[in-house]
Length: 116
Image (tube, rainbow, N blue to C red):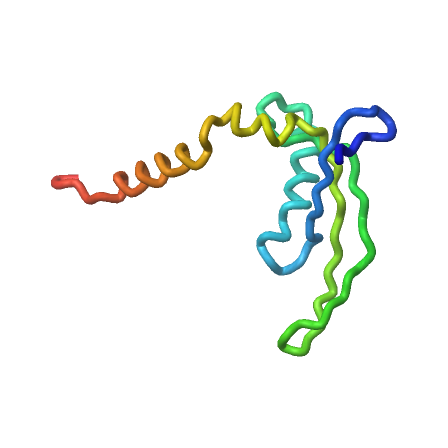
């Protein structure tokens, strides 16, 4: 199903992001906010997709296997849809092939060279 903004009727993507915690992966929301605040948002070199809205969700608690309780909060981040998922392959070609080329290039760069 395609999501649309109620205000602009443009197609949007809704992403679930874990709020701040001790895990380094929890930094995504802070980074998005930083890159979407001025003066960074208007910088022409800023490639970050703009955030149209943030929707905080209620805290979710769940028992963990070690007996502790995980109390996590999430935020829905609404961003414009840049292009359809089907177009990704057209734009990037065969992504798996390109990824394999990158892996091979990195392996070659790690080979020790005589005299260097």
